[in-house]
Structures are given as structure tokens and as C-alpha cells.
Image 1 (cartoon, one colour):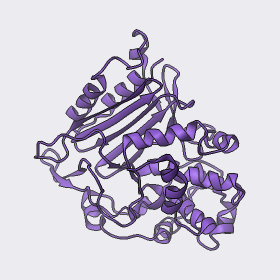
Image 2: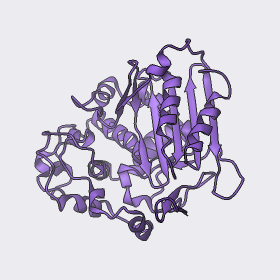
Image 3: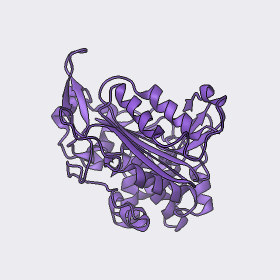
Image 4: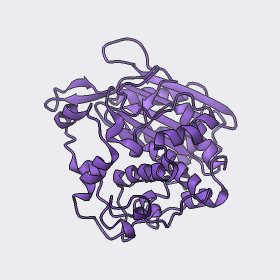
Length: 355
């Protein structure tokens, strides 16, 4: 992804506080004014951390959103799952060139030609299983409490022919990470949530991060997520905070906070979670694409490159951006509802990371 930042390049050098106290809150106010119901962010670096929030916890009630609130992180989950997989590689319990068929025999047609590496960097050619679901507003509301098994999600994808031969292209597919969750369980005997808890959450003290399994609620303080339902121009908000996240599984089921995400990515990029060889592999992007092994790369037009992973699910959008040296971090959650807040989000990103 490329985000323009030319309008900021001529400005004065930013101080450690990146334009002074209160600026982060004003940025979030602008995002919420564009249509979301809430926005949360934390910036952390050598000078400390600043956290802010804008908007409300719930439509129609005056309580303001809390900067430390929890939210569904969607596909940012993939960075956690990829870290566990690469830890297993470092422990010699798994190889990146192992095929899917080695660990999940018979689960994927042609699985003897798809490698773990290709699952991690989305070069497997497998169809995204969500393409086989009715994810219109009405379709989602009918099924948001349904429980899904990983094998059911994979079956939705493998019912369709692959997009290309393994290694012959690139296409983002949640199916890849559902399969990686199954591989983690085949190697360790524990599901992905248990391994993430044991290997990442507990060692780093991420007290507000979890994979909820089939529990439909978000524990602890959180801003509600909404889906606009009805004819354009007269939509009504439907609260979709409660959902069964098994529909995302290892591809996107986790809940976290901005502070916990910054802590995780700081530990990851500074080598606390992976040895140098595995971290190097993780941060090596597929040629022509901004995706490595569970990490995305974002380049600002003024030359700054950031690493992290975004995520989205109904009612919530997550952005997590980090300098490759692990010194400066921004994690944010936007409770999407109406409008397009992306220009204001991009302005904030550019302000924080501009040289």
C-alpha cells in the first residue's frame, strides 16, 4: 500500500510529541466527524506513549469512547498466527517448505504442492472462503451467531478451483490462515488460540488480548460496532458488536487494544519473539506485492516504509503501523459506520511518521 505524504514533507521537523499534546485527539475527532462512531489510537516510541479516543461507546448515549477500550482486530490476527508458525520453524518442529499434505493430509486438493510458506505469504492460489458466503448486511445478520469449524471454512474455498498454481501468483486469502491454524494444531496438539496465549500473550503481558473462540461478547470496556442497514440515505444503525468470531478463526478472530498491539509489534520487530533468520523471512515481501510472511508493508510517498498488519470486520477497522526498527508505533481502531474517514486516517499516519 502507498499513502501520499507530500503535503507534509515541507513542514518543520516534528518534535517527539509529533506536534504537541492534544494533536492525536484532534486527529481522531476529525476521523469521527467523517462518519465513524468511535476512533481509538496509541502512538508509542522512545519519548513515551500517547493514547486518545473520540466518539461514543454507543449510539444515542453520551458516554465517550475510552482510549484503552478493546476492539475486534480482524486480520491483524494473522501477524500473531504467523509469529507462532515461525517460532515452530525456529524450533525445528516445522519447515516453511513442508507441504500442507504433510500436516493436513486429504484436507486440501493438491495440498502436496502447497507449502507453509505459500500459505503465509498468500501465494497458494487458494480461493478466499469468504467469497462463498453471503456477506451482504442481511446475509451477515442471519448468520453472525453461527459456529463454524475450520474444516467447514476450508471446504467453502476448496469447492472452487484455485486461482492459480501454487507459487504462480499472489491473492490475499483468509483460507490460508485458517489452514495455518490447523497446521499449528497438528504440530502442537493445541489450537492457535492456546499457542498464541502461551507463546505471545502471557510472555508479553498482553492482558487485554485474546481469541474469544465462540464467545460472542467483547469482555471489558469497548465501543460498539454498527452496520448501516436500509436504503441509501436512510440507513439505520444495527449493533453488530456481538458475533461468533469462529467465522474468522485463525484468519481474524482476535480482540485487543491499541496499547497491546503496539507492545506486540515492538517485541516482534526488536527480536524478542523470533530469531533473526525467521524475522528476516517474515519481513521479506513477495516481489511486486507488499506482503511478507504475515506482515504488510506500507510505503509513504516521502519514502518512509512501515510494517504491520491491518484488519477489518463488521463494525471495526484496525490499522497497526510500525517503523521496521521497532522504535515508533501507531495502532488504531475505527468503528466504521457511515462516510469515508480514510483521508483523515492517512493524514494522521503521515503526521506521525513523516521524517
